[in-house]
Image (cartoon, rainbow, N blue to C red; front, side):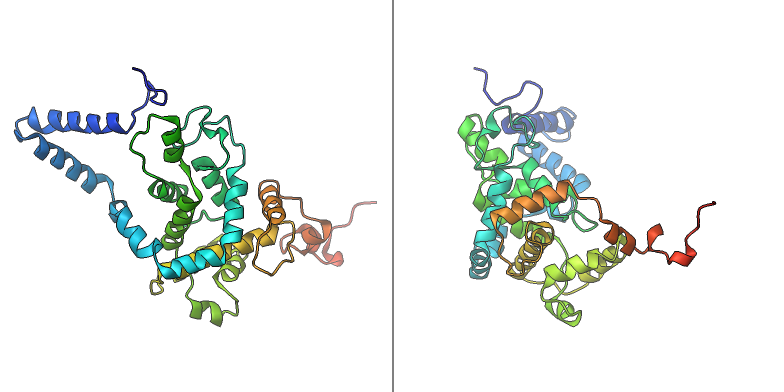
Length: 301
């Protein structure tokens, strides 16, 4: 019987596992390297792991959640900012992107329920927030999304498929923890010495200095002692809130509490940046209009 969500030109999970077993048989059993099928599979997987993966790929999802997500400190940070985080999730999850096909294998029609966050929406959100840089790539973000997804026993049904290729709000919380632990952050002492209230404000100020200076700042952060996961999470959330406040509908807001209006205003501004005013253009150091009047060329009469 043909499965509704099993494309004829792609492999689902069961077919992919079968392909690995067949490859192991061809490479190790048929060549006489071993007569045991389980040994052949182990040899194949070991070689693939050694050649194509780094330490980051060998993460244990259960241990990660136990050590970094299911803790009192992480719960406290999430509850503190729950209103703002859940609004960001809801507004990006309700967004219509494309024709219902998402980057992790969803089919037409699967994305009709807007209570779940697709991979495409997740990546768009991170791009809007300016989180992609020398320390964190779109590929890194995709891994965070995949590792945070709900597991399902039967991916053939529509309901299970929805869970498999989207994030619920709980999955989204986990993804934030993973992103926070992936990126380097300034230590509280470094931020305090620089005269900033928190890491979010510190990073936004460093970004304004230009890409080269910002990348140098990230390298300095990477040499600092590792910080606990809950502290990294708070750094990320404050960066998220301050970034949205900066471009949102209420740029003067300092309450570190996001509203729906602010998030929607930010989303619009992030994708359709306004042209600089004459005053802003004149204030730019390299602007031709910022030169003193006596230095400006005069037109021939």
